Length: 402
Image (cartoon, rainbow, N blue to C red; front, side, top):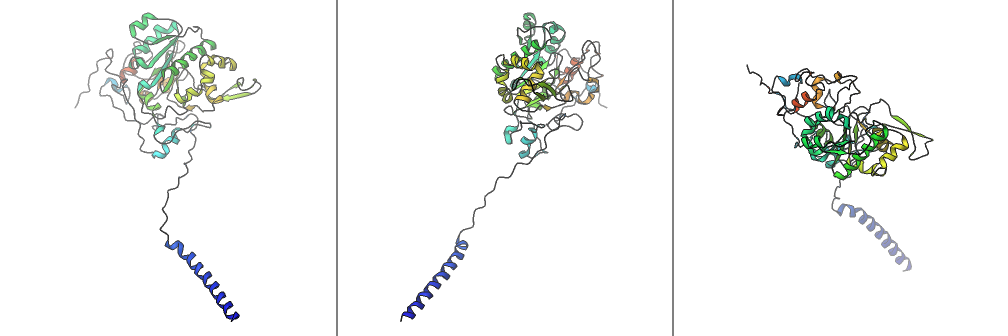
């Protein structure tokens, strides 16, 4: 009897093991199919933009944002193969790049060469800008009000009066009343010294911060700003990004003693955009510059490194904030050979310039329009190609149709 009960117990134990095993095998099959979840994909790696190349989408020969333009319909306008007619200060720009997937646009635009700073993916990688969003600072001096400044007020600045702020070293009530220009007396020295230049730049920076505008663009009084091109370029970025756009005057970084973060025993190398060609800084980046640039701190920073205004801007951004300059060939100064600029690309640039007293013939090559005697800088000719409705532009004869 005892042996029989033991056998029954063993049998029950083995049966329970088999039953449990079958149950474990059947449980997964009885469960409903698991819901598939899309896992986040890694962001594609983007090769940093190389020095000397703009990070925006460019045409094959100009290095400017690819856009459709209206071709001038007059014989006079054939000095350029393309012209942009009647584009005023209220122009809105929206760049649509069909050749690049949406997921890649932000990272590509933000790719800077070898440093921090970059694009934001998605809708925040671009701005839909109007001219009212841009603060254009023009640096000048009292002695150039008549020869240089009046030309700017007559041409491109007339299309952006409310956005253009002229920083000088003296009052000019007569010019201000006659033209309506926004002239700011910085009370800085009229001398062309490092201290005087940095004094004016310090005032420019503070006025921009007060303005609440999205972009700070600095130019000199011998620059023509092509406003539609400027809008297209800045619309490739978002003002909250860390963006520093411009053209170096050197083919290598500048080196200076580091006297802000150390005692000057070590040196630091950095790129800077020359003020003679103009440069632009996003508001997001400008706010980060505040400890070294606001309320007179710009002057003290410049004194520590003993460099002029545009170099100090580059030092604060590249050396202190570790944000790289985005190199672009759309900005031009009188230091380069402007005659080499292809004629059919002139209106696609952002800034242009002209040679000084020592090289008056260094101007962009536009053969039609005003004569060299009438327009030695070629700024009037450029302006009439962009805005043929200007009242002082020549009345153009339409082409005869065959």
